[in-house]
Image 1: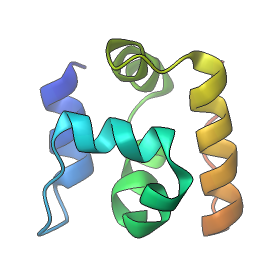
Image 2 (image 1 turned 135 degrees about the horizontal axis):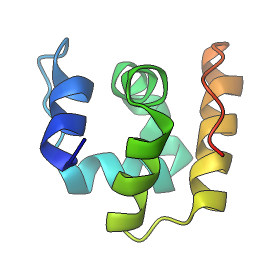
Image 3 (image 1 turned 180 degrees about the vertical axis):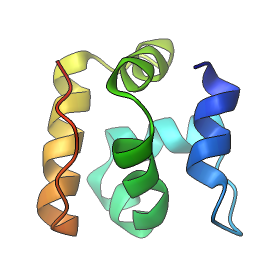
Length: 85
């Protein structure tokens, strides 16, 4: 699943469409993430963990940073997401 597929999945139900840089920024910045809860919920809940890691790596986000973003967003949203290993 490439960047286009990730964005298609993340943006599908939303009128506000994020580009790759905006999604990456949300993964790096908690305040930005909570402003786009639907997008982040789709990313962590519908995009396979392997594709999450691929997207993150392509945008300079380490696996540790991605895991932290997922944990922080799960705490905010009250949802549980597949583990990123």
